[in-house]
Length: 489
Ligand code: AMP
Ligand code: MG
Image (tube, rainbow, N blue to C red; front, side):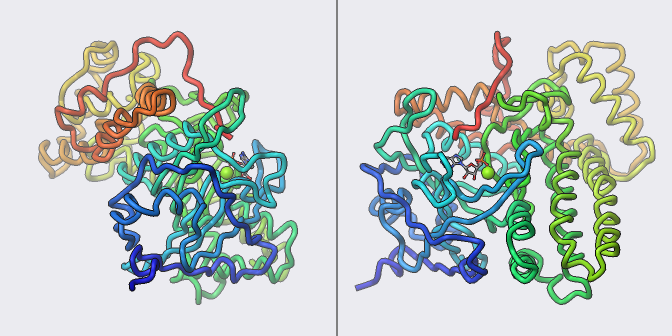
């Protein structure tokens, strides 16, 4: 008889557990009463080399609830620290357990983690559990981000636990199965730098290099290369967020990965009306993580990362500081280059002209002044269908439009190529807040998952610009209250 391992396709490794002890604690999930698989990402399961049918119909609920540990898994909770809203704290997986690293048929190594599987040694006062709404929210937004082409953790499944969780009110409990190319964070390095020995820190850095930047492993100063590479990836990542109007909401250093994937979808949301001051998170009262601040915060977080590497960068501290500072000082330029290249693409521009930045800035200024919808403005330009909104009727816009057309005329590619390029980078649909809320309400209050399934389906091809998507491009009725998001802990 085929073993469960063969039948399901589990192919676990546990390289993280080979790190020094300070980085984790072996921890089993706490079984739940009556797990039910309510959403399952079949295509993703197949990519992992798993038997999707078997999981969906037989033991998926038990596995994704933590009631049954898959063969070969070694469940553990990871230790880390982090600056939360600028304040340094000891953290760790308080409500997450890593099952192991699945080696896919393509040979990729993917963390499979349960979020909400019960208490761990790092739970502090928390219950280690998660509520259904926030777990579905992470599922929807992370999968939408992936479809938008933005590096991100993925969502494989959500199970309800059949147990209540107690927050401001009683909510249905749930567990999300999250995939990541690893869960090593800036906060993991901060933990090592603060509480580990230099050798433990070095082990972590070598691990991160081997896992994420293997080309740099043998370089002359490989830890400097690690810093450079993480800076590059994060600069690229945050530029992508800005280009689609994504607001992470809680860019603490523990929520920034070394791999360059977006992680920890708590109070995140997409901006409707263009305004750099946009903040959705109810706890971000100072606007630290506002849309327009994200590039600076990423730079700040990277500086914290650089500090952790100082003992590895050079034997003499002064030299190490200089090396780190030199790299950090290059970040903003890198970010801006990514952003401007992305904006050129959004406007159908193939070549480079010095004045392009001004052209982009003028459009953004108009959008802010006339409270234009960020996504729909670029969509309108891409499908050559001006919307019936204020901005398009202003003389300023007409003037800008002429200037833009003239700019497009100064490149070899024909207009049709520009429009094609624009449609491939300006999404028609994003997970609009009111749509996400409606889907979550139906799921949580009525156990009706069909609204969410339709939404997920539409979000899976954001650049299709198909007629079926029109409905999902519409804005909410004028909201009485500004949209607010919550951490969902
Ligand atoms: P987050 O805001 O999700 O990044 O979480 C910050 C820290 O709080 C992490 O260490 C989490 O594991 C921990 N945490 C969040 N919610 C809970 C909970 N319900 N029980 C235990 N720990 C939690
Ligand atoms: Mg976190």
